[in-house]
Image 1 (cartoon, rainbow, N blue to C red):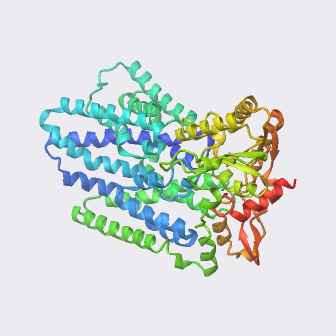
Image 2: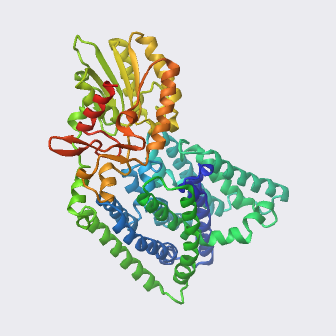
Image 3: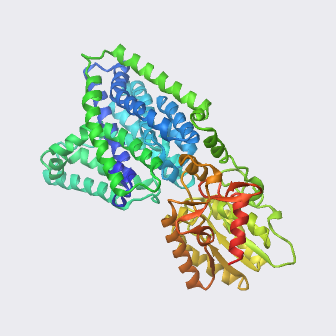
Length: 606
């Protein structure tokens, strides 16, 4: 439930993603308990184990994937459909965690609209259970004690690795098995009875269970997207889950609460609910012109529970009944379903998202997303992609003109605007992807930004430019609190280059998933578009106001891109280029060459 409410956007459940970590502990405990019991009874077989996994996981998963297909066909544009097709293929191989790692982070805005994003956890779990029984089989002859010691050592190693990568490669730490295995191993160690609680006093059980529930509640309420995860912070919900497994008997208050009929019922359908919720929420985000309302998202969260009940009753339960489906049938259905979805995935990828579904006008619009921005951004020299090896600005970024020089400092949005600014003034450009122009506060989550921004600070100290423009996709860094960091940045500039004038430039208009896709979904052509409503306007406007307040308090300049390009919430989407219209923005919010010229001209004329 916390995972579903977190994905639905309820702020109270900002740490709801820890529900997956709790699940890993429970899963590790349950599956290991079954394996050990069968081993002691002499009935354990690998074929039987994998049969149980197929019965448990695949029928409901295949139903949700099959149901998602027609909605994807009608609602997703080619690039989105191609991504969806890739995820279909990856899910069938239980490799979707690697796919989503390569595409974007779990907490990225773009990730919210991926219908199968949540299958990353299934991939981690199944990768674990592909190897775990084999490991036990190899170590059984050495006895349970040595097996437990091996598992404990692996758990410690996995946690150390996770805590190491959570700062240097946070997305890898989040998605991959080696950094998640320790959570499943906590449950496995409990199943080995490494911690014995049978003879524990009742009051200790009461306290242990209550502490466990408290730790989980704390993580759900107080953790957030900026919490380094899954390093040592993940110990809070996982230890909490372990304490509940150990101590929450039917004689404890927590045990009675969690054993209530309603919560047990939710538990029965929880797997199907988890499967249904993300496609429902993701497709809602695709078809909503604005951000879906909390009422809509809440209703969809409730709907996922209703769908889960029917899936549990008519899909999960029958397929787990060995009298209705034999082992051979289960494996045949698993193979057939996997081949079907893998085939759809390959076809969708090769046909670029079945782009033949679209009209010629829609295809022309979508083609505009393939924008060659390298020249106008001055890529590789004055615009650094921090995901690539190069991490130094070229000397050519510094303008050596004797005239007054404006230094532009910011992220890729600043790089896009720099082209237009260069037509009006002499510009030194220092821009890097995902790096706001801040002197501190970003190094922990984007270490390379610190190095690049340190370079810019030294450049300001040495060159003392006449003017400094600070521009970025400010709302992307809201969780890093850019406003307070901006004050620190402005104070630094005033200290090292007191003669420099400082100007903050507010955010540009934005459309999701992109302006070309936004127009295509409305079945419009460029000739029919001038001002276009942007669903992001309210959030951008609030950020504009906050930045202007900082500028006023710090006695520096402020220029509003929204005021320059928008009339209320309707913003400039196209501009005349010769005899035809062209876009002002080529993706969600990066200016085209023409858009950059238009904005710069309007900013300088104000």
